[in-house]
Length: 483
Image 1 (tube, rainbow, N blue to C red):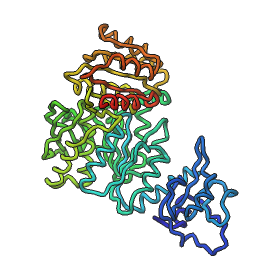
Image 2 (cartoon, rainbow, N blue to C red):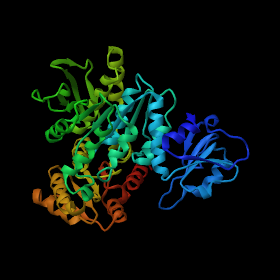
Image 3 (tube, rainbow, N blue to C red):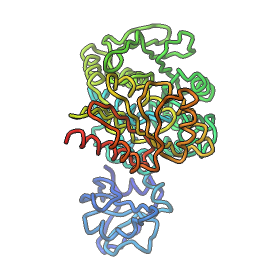
């Protein structure tokens, strides 16, 4: 990857040697970077991070024993005898600086994805599409913070052509930090919703936090914006510097969008299992069509928009130039299904289960209601819902609004739990007093009551914030359905 001297310069640390052998940092070659001795490899550089329940400095000697070429620490006193170390003030910051150095040494392009809802779905779809023509490395699981994103970059193989990273945040300044490590060539903002409003207190502040991704854009970089949200689009155009560019991504075609590059959906049609649509590319006043019609196995604007972001990236990286490549891209999109925990549908021997319990916000709840209502046609529709967290003082009102959204569909029974279940029920009964809602004490109580109610042929939706443990509950019913 690089020499230890490069690491020292990248992170601004200083070399400390506790070995008798004559060792020059320029001659020590770093094969990889590790923050965990359980997965460390020979010639890795071990970086001692510190968390609430661990201190990486406790494992410095272990790392050397397992073959680490050197260690990075913030405590010179703990450098093991017989080893060489780089001492820094902050090891997390050092990790980011080393990742930034490696990002440019690779010479690849970087795509950064952020937004309130749909980051992971969009990022994985972009990755799958770009893999049809390029060597792509992407965020694993949900590693989208200052440690996970840096580790993603540092784990990219030497022949990587594109890195796709996901950027999460909980407050102002966090995406600013991430984007200055990754320095994306393309930034994507999927949407602005209510996630993290507890800390940021307004959607305007959430928009500002997401817009921080543009701060790290390389010169000539481009940001793709959900331009169906005209407020977000206008804010982006106003705030972006002159050496950056804006692309509009829209489900509803707006010919008046003041933008040199627009990708939009055309002739959207619902099918039995999702939606079918064409794609238009408008560049500098000229319009062209993506030659192959696309299909997605979900319903709603969000599912289409995720595809449009992926098509945009395909155009920007040049892999959509030929008919052959466009057909490969269409195959990937048409074959794609929801990821488990994010809307995956499982048809068991006894009933249908939709597991959308990885997390929850007002926007993702509404998307889940729409998709479930259509996917479960012909079944008795049963909902198991938990609360939405991190909404702060806005939680009561947003749970009430979510209840109203739920009651606008033809569901047979809803089992709901959480601190704001009463507000959810209040909102639902404002719209439909006849909707059957059962308030449950906790997740276990939801499971017990479902057992008493569910019968063969039913369809169930599981949706809640992650800490409610509804993913496990959904998987339990999948096992029961196949027993």
